[in-house]
Length: 124
Image (cartoon, rainbow, N blue to C red):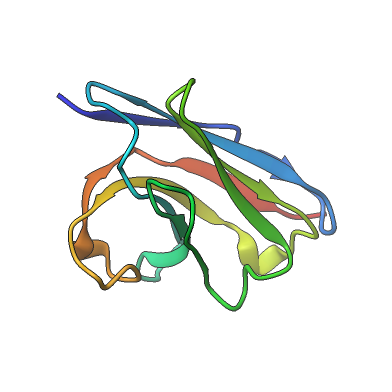
């Protein structure tokens, strides 16, 4: 059974940084596209970033470009989200997603596996 477990969330001041981690267990990591979504209170879950299993292709939403960086470590079967210059509007529960099953990377329905999420709060 595939499991994704996120960690690294917390409270940070505007302009600060956080690094989220997502560990995969239960399946081979290589070949899996991995991604991050987020869901703010009262809003739908939205795409943030993703990277293919080969690491050759990366997608970012406009709000993440230049501030967030996704990376993956095949040896540790983990994917990371480095978030810099955080803003209050980045406050959300961040979810790790695994195994992209269609070309629509931005759609939640395209991802087979999900973690339970980690809370990120950006506030002074």
